[in-house]
Amino acid sequence: MSDVSTLAAKPHDLVFTRGHALIGGTILLIVGIAFFLYRQRAVEVQAVSPLYEDIESSVSATGTVVPTNDFAARATFSGIVDNIYVHLGERVRPGEKLLQLRDQFAQSRVDNARAALLTSELNAENMRQNGSKEDQIAQASDLAKAQSEQISAEKALATVQQLRQIGSASDAEVASARQRLETANSAMQAAKTRAQSRYRPEDLKSTEAKIAADKANLAGERVSYGNANVASPIQGTVYLLPVNRYDFVQMGAELVHVADLKKLSVRASFYEPDIRQLKTAEPVRVTWGSGAPGHVWNGRLESKPMAVTGDGVLRTGMCTVDIIGDTDGLPVNTSVTVTATVQKHLHVMTLPREAVRDQGTQHFVFRIADGQLKKTAVNVGLVNAMKAEITSGLKIDDRVAVHASEGESLKDNLRVK
Image 1 (cartoon, rainbow, N blue to C red):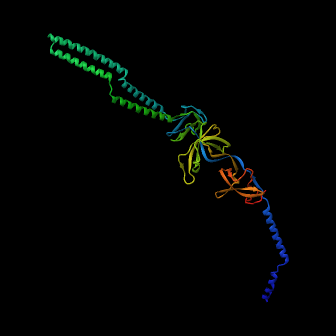
Image 2 (tube, rainbow, N blue to C red; image 1 turned 45 degrees about the horizontal axis):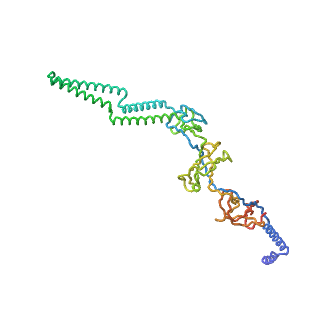
Image 3 (tube, rainbow, N blue to C red; image 1 turned 90 degrees about the horizontal axis):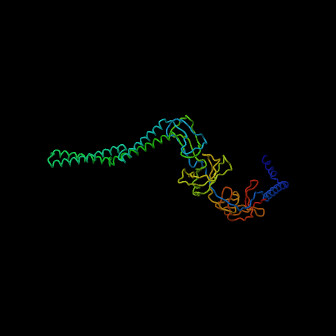
């Protein structure tokens, strides 16, 4: 009984009326019309035309502002800051005292070393002159006495010899007179030697070595004095003074920095692939985005790196950039951006960078023609973040789509307005 009912109900379930066909056809028609209208609608796009203008390619790096000529004083021994003679921002002259560390015997050690050197130099001069002034006077007196004695001895010997010939003097008296003359001759020779070459060459060399040692000692004591009494060797401005009076500082601690703040440089780290594009003496731009947005300082690439550091792709090299002209408003130790122009083409056809698309190694744009987008191959030259140089493929009066206003993807043959 149940099987019969089931078989009887199946034909009723498969009934497809004319009304059903009408409804289905209407739905398909609506979907088809909607799809046709969607395909035929015009998408609003932002369009541009090529321009003739200059374009440049550049590379950038971050760097730190440093003085070109910086005097940085550090403590060479641990001690207490006794006095500070300058204040931050003060202009100083060469030789002007900046601060003093406690070392009460520094000056006396310099004075003693200087006195020892003067004594050695005086001794050497006396040796070169064969004695001091007093020695020379005494030598002249001794020589005169020796000469007088020699003359007297010669006369006495001659007299005794004459007397001996007439028998008025004995042989002993003649021998005594001859002995006196020999003694006088020896004294005369010794006096001459003392007057002419009192010192040996070895004596003079020893004195000169003593002078060299005393000079080195004085230089060392002056260094010690300079370490305790810090003076500026250059003219400039005190731009860093991290200590206060009576502070205890460790050996190696920074004490004071002086520099000419009109002459600044930037030490910038460029990535390894960019270094080969840099050229020494080429102009660069220096910007300080966080401190002076929009302000540009002009610079020149002073030197390229002799070596690179780092691992993997983050290998960098340090370049030096000299700031040219006005450095006002650019503090020392500031982190800045250095931009170097590596290539520049004048009066060439350009488009916004986002209007040029890539497909592998090929480049193309969507040119607008007869209300539709036409995928057009182009050749490009210089490319930077904002613009691309078009070397062929477009005319100056062409219109090129940049992007759709409603964010739709651009494609070939798309109707646009």
